[in-house]
Image 1 (cartoon, rainbow, N blue to C red):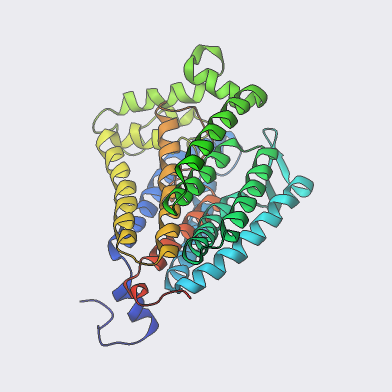
Image 2 (spheres, rainbow, N blue to C red):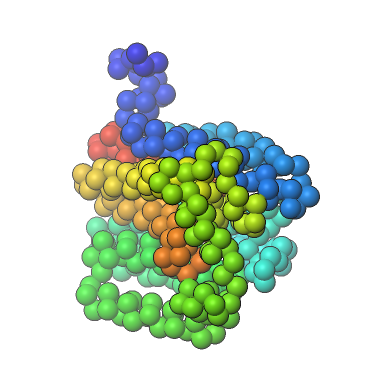
Length: 374
C-alpha cells in the first residue's frame, strides 16, 4: 500500500501520484550505488592525502540528504516555479563564476572553485541545469511569438557563459553546455544554414582549443598516442576493468584504487569495474540510459514547447556528462575531469545533479499537461 490515497488532495499526495516514480527509483538506485562505490574507492585516496580513511564517505553522507531534499523540493514545483528558479540560479552562478577570477582557488592552473568555511563550490556546475531551462524558455518564447529577441538574448547569454568558461579555463564544461544549447536550438527550429554554420564554428573552436590550449592538446595527444605523455590514470583504469572481468574481484578486493589518485571522483567507474565486474557496469550504464530515454519519451508527449526544450536540454546534459566520465575511464575519448552524476564524490556535482533531475521530474509530472505557462 502507498502512503497516499488517490483521493488525498494534499500537496505531497498530488506529487506522489503525478511524479515519474520509475525515474525517481532509478535516481535512488544511482545514489545507493554511489555510496557503495565511494565507500570502496575513497579510503585509499584519503590515506594518501593524510585524511581519516572514511573522510570522503562521511562528507558524502552529509551532503547526500541535503541533495535529496533539493531534488524532492524542486520536483514539487510548478513549471512557472522551475522557470523562476532557473533564472535566479543562473544569475547567481554567473556572478560567482566572475567572482572566482578574483577570489577563486587555483587548482591545476584553473580558477573554477570558490572556497569558504572549508567547502569548495564550483559555480559552473549550477550553470548547466539553470541555463538549459533558461535557454529552453527563451527559445520557446521566440518560437511561439515570432519575435527574434528570444533567440538574440539566448545567443548573447551563451556567448557570455562560454567566454567565462574558456577563461577559467574549462573546455570540457564548454563542450557540454554548447552541446545542450545547440540541441535545444535545433529542436526549436534552427534553420539548416545556421546548423551548418554552428557545425563549422564548433569544429573551428575545437581546432583552436587544440592549437592554443596546451592542456587540451596534451589530452588529445595522449588519447591518440598514450606514450606521448602521462597516461597513468587511464592505463590503471583499463587494468582495473581487466582485473575485474565479468563478475569482479568482490567488494573491497580491488587493488588499482590504491594507486588511482581520482578513484573516488573521475575514475570511480574503474572501481566498479574491478570490484563488481562488467555486468554491474552494464547495469549502471543501463540505469543512466533508462533515465534519459524515459524522460525523453515523457517530454515528447508534451505540447508545451518550453517543457519539451527544457527537459531535452537537461537530459542531454545528464546523459552527456555520464558518457564523458565513463568514456574517459574506458579510454574511448580523451580524459576530462568530469564526475559521474550521483555516483562520484563531489558536493557541487551532487547538488547540481539533484537540481537537474529535480527539474526533470517537475517538468514531466502528469499535471503539467494542463498547467501551461502563459
